[in-house]
Amino acid sequence: MEIVQHNDVKKGTFLAKDGDKTAGEMSYTWAGPDKFIIDHTEVDEAYGGKGIGKQLVMKAVEFAREQNVKIMPLCPFARKVFSVTPEIQDVQF
Image 1 (spheres, rainbow, N blue to C red):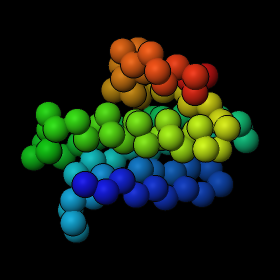
Image 2 (image 1 turned 180 degrees about the horizontal axis):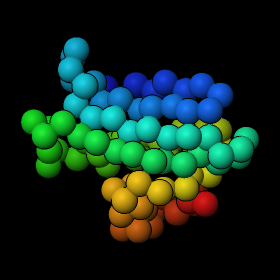
Image 3 (image 1 turned 30 degrees about the vertical axis):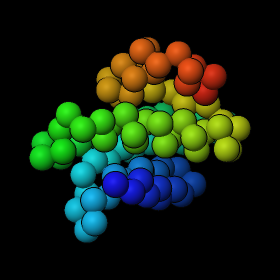
């Protein structure tokens, strides 16, 4: 499984790719130069229960740390991951 990021000035996505198939997708919107909002996470039902959604969130956390920005997890799934994963609280806005 490979996580691929597409980022532009206002929005972006993290895609979980299994070869040529998209197993999951997480979208975000920039809320200024120092934070972005995770607004949606979706995993293909064929890949459910395999931790794909959490991998997407963790890739966003890695990106936030590299860019020295914060994340607002408004998506219910991302919010849940943040609430049960203390080691990523440093990037939560």
